[in-house]
Image 1 (cartoon, rainbow, N blue to C red):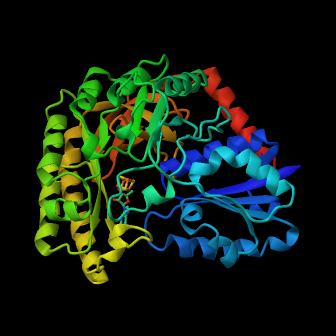
Image 2: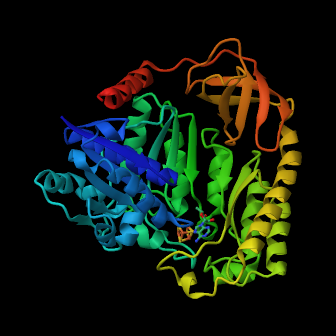
Length: 458
Ligand code: 5AD
Ligand code: SF4
């Protein structure tokens, strides 16, 4: 029996890539195991967006090395694989396969070479391919959410970011193939779909049939789909028709993740973000003018080379102007191959730490007041986790907010239930169930049983 173990790091794109890689391996006759000690092939799906990701990978590989004597094979895939390429073979000679995400469509051929005993297999043809990695064999391991990649890669080249070098050039799937996948997901009983892309709203239908906003609407119209999410949007391509589409269709979730990165126009220019503070705020004004209460979230980098106190202050005032419901703040970290690596990393670590702390503290205050708007509201929540040790169930609102609630019964994961909000915290809501949970479709239960079988073949 051919067996594999996979470990995934990083963003939702990586998580979903792993679902596709798992599906491909199972299709090729491999069985997934949950303990690396039982696996013939160990795959490590890596992330290199921040920090010293490469070092972490080699550290982890060294731990795996202990397992080497038992005839195991090792594969490093994903962003660090693409970034480090064949250097991985030098540093970790027991690795046999190194592949970036833009080469996953060659996985069956690479696996065949691995099985034939080759030990230096690479899939590193990034920024050359126009092809995407679509497979009908995706192992949908998330119990309540079906992911669909609509666009891969990135052509934006923000000066701090490694993604254009690790994930290749932008390539969109036809809207017809996206819709066919959405229909398949709905038939499997999923009610929630998340459309994925590094720059999801740079989507360009190769068939020219639908704009991104039209694709959102079309996915929302698929029978059985109740929630459609999409990440990550880029302000440069954020058009008003996206807001109009959300306004017109309740199935499109009332949440927009629109990373600003900095509130200073000078820093945005140095980051090569292709917009100014005012341009960004104009897009935010569209979302504020919407009929629905749209929740806004963002990513922010502090300590970019040359960021002055005034630039940082601009970021703080932007937080206040937008009134975000959540932000993900990061300290700038220089990444290999990026233009910013040639800039002097001028902000000392202690200043980065301090700015990040100020940013997070200010945002916490904003959220503390923001979340009070939900007090006494009754909202539909999708159940994501069973009861915790205090007997609370955890779910998510359409706005993507965590809702903890008490319930007489344990509602199934993936069901919907109405919850009245009785208490608010800066990053979660607390309430009590006011309805019975919706029933899960038999198709979803069958799908989960199938997934369980994939994982239990250990
Ligand atoms: N340093 C710090 N944060 C970064 N991000 C991307 N590259 C870097 C970097 N070099 C952050 C951005 C992006 C998020 C996914 O990670 O905010 O939106
Ligand atoms: Fe990186 Fe910028 Fe592309 Fe986002 S848009 S993946 S931050 S280069």
